[in-house]
Length: 84
Image 1 (cartoon, rainbow, N blue to C red):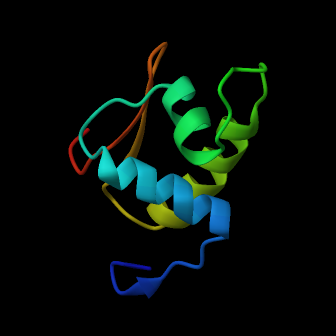
Image 2 (cartoon, rainbow, N blue to C red):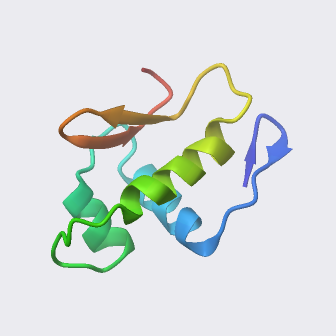
């Protein structure tokens, strides 16, 4: 993947997470949706796996960019969008 002409090297799970967010671009996705769609979990075991992977993905995708693509919607979930 490339962003702003720079190659972004993603691990397989980061790629699946980004792909899921792209398929739901400009929509807020919940933790449950991510657990089911990316990790194939059908429950929320109270894990921080989403936080860890989103943090890694955010560092890679939004690094050096004036406009971040990954947004946290407090109390709801996450959104991939070019607008804040």
